[in-house]
Length: 396
Ligand SMILES: *[C@@H]1O[C@H](CO)[C@@H](O)[C@H](O)[C@H]1NC(C)=O
Ligand SMILES: *[C@@H]1O[C@H](CO)[C@@H](O)[C@H](O)[C@H]1NC(C)=O
Image (tube, rainbow, N blue to C red; front, side, top):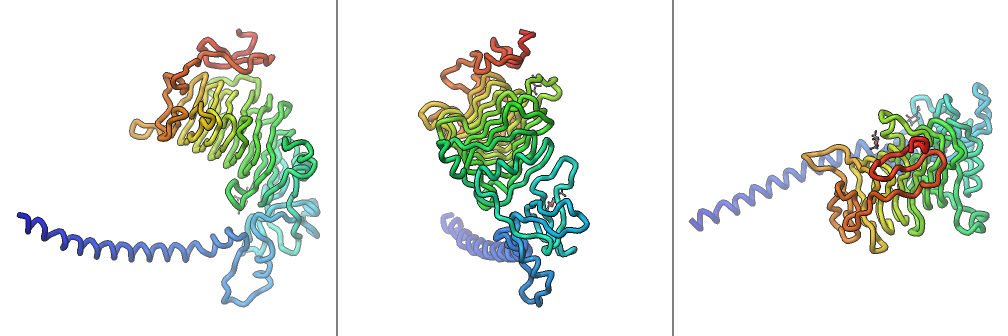
């Protein structure tokens, strides 16, 4: 028995080795093929320069392709057919070989205007990217309601005047616009100051996209219908909330429109006394990561929904955890009866073992019926006593 038992195993392992070698060979081939296909494009994007085959002799057009890198800021000039673009700025998205022109995003695209324009290299000049908060503030202030502002790649410092103000440097959005960068990861657009959307902002949509904000973000427009944060990274100090969503619109939406009015998509919030403070009805977080808050990753005074989120490594102060809510937290999308969210239970939970709805997240110290925070606001206030929703003062 022992010999027959022992015999097959070397044979098997020889087989196994052969199979493994074969599989590795195939894998290697696949990877090589894939790389050959991806390389020219990826390389071009990675170092920001679009490359052409070295073997072909250089034509004027190919020289053009090398002239501007992806994500760079440019200034248009000498355009005859679209003279209104002259002296305005844009951000290079790619080179379109088929027409020998660059596809450029307008720095400030007004509502209804095309976002992209295609321009020859001869009609553009490289422009220095905004170097300070003051310069970004100036660009943003040229953008009226509904416009989309696109910032080039690179890091923007707070600047000298902001340093004098004591490090509390903040970019203020004063109208309902979209502010976009060239991505929140390394090589994208980094703002070394906070961002605030003030109470007086009025309009349909405020959106932040593709930016890394090193500072706190506060979004509190009273009369904006929707707020969207897409691919925003926030890295904030531990002494204040990293992201505050406060009283967005004082109009209580009908139930049918409540969900998703405030949408956080693929955002990554690091640090903060709290990670995200939610004082608004209808907030949905999709595929977000919230980490490293001093106490809670999410502190919500209104109901909200999460899908595919990781909220952990919080409670840095020794107390706290993933979520503290005073209303419902709906976990969207169940897979095999389990939710995809990974939520830290309390400060000691390193396995992110989950959120416990019937205790409303505040494990061990449940004081969930407390009414909170917005008590003194004039038009709308959070209804305590287990009502779990916003109410007009008139209804109370
Ligand atoms: C602008 O160009 C980029 C890059 O080619 C493309 O991905 C995007 O869809 C274009 N946007 C519009 C609105 O045409
Ligand atoms: C919040 O509650 C309202 C009213 O009950 C509901 O219509 C809405 O879908 C909820 N929103 C979220 C994001 O869960």
